[in-house]
Length: 106
Image (cartoon, rainbow, N blue to C red; front, side):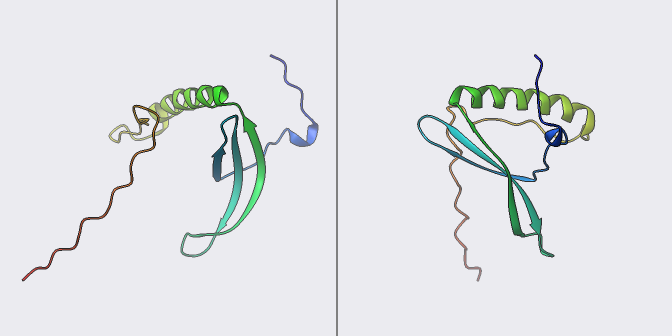
């Protein structure tokens, strides 16, 4: 496929964070460039690109990212660490876990 672009878009944009929202009909992905303070907390952010996509495209994007991540990790990451990504079986987000109740020691 031949893709056309404006010369000023050839360099792309840098994003180090993303925010994802969805409606019944589309997903919106905001790509952000964040600056961090001395404690590693995001201090400022700039929206560098907003992309709206169909639910079908989201599934294709997830598959493409998983495939590319697997190839990248097998070459670039230490081999003694498991960098695989596992999706929840039914597509639901994992339930947050509560911290254990503190116990009194006598």
